[in-house]
Length: 312
Image (cartoon, rainbow, N blue to C red; front, side, top):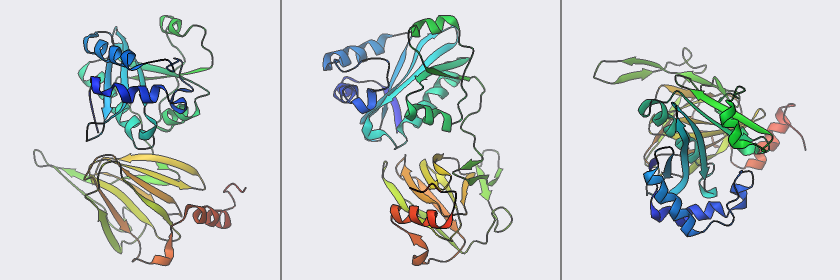
């Protein structure tokens, strides 16, 4: 995945999401009448604009997946916006685009704040921003609110320079741990963890998954008893976890961050970058009967073993 300037070849795929009601149903602008010429005009205008920055979010194969923007750039502030194609949803493109454009806003453009809003009825967007720990903004300048005059039920967010976000201690009740890491000047870092000291179980098996193309999903199973720590020493992998506490996601891209799964939890892994490596340290040897490989069977197992899981 990467960001680049919009290109005229992106226009047909831009029209795809503009005409997809599932994508646009909660957006303020009506895109249903937009044409290829409209998309091409927007792309060309983006090359010349000084007040707006529009970038394409693309795959490793340079396929357009969405647009991420900083609009109304003025007085060290900007308004954030993002839209992605339906095919890219759940594959990490939205978070990648947002994270990268925020880095650009603060590190390269030296902005002081970035703000945005979504309809409170847009449950998908609200859930996305809330799970990444973005704070709701209350004190929005009147000159910004004027642009949304007549639009009700909006939820505003903002990020200030220096803010930390997406910092989490747990994902679906599974602990996020910081693996001990020793840096050496101009010689990299060494990270390590020890059984029963840094993680709450003895390690009996270690395995790793490598050489996976971008966008591939793996996992699709849970364990009844096995405990594991998952970490990504190279690349970027999105981890989706589900148990009686709900379904949550977290990106693994820092070798010093690990997730301890010590309860029956369904997991899916999405490779956000080709050739990323996922390492797993497990509490026991391979035992096929410990696996739950069907999602329906997993949900029934949780219901049978946990009174807090919602019954039908």
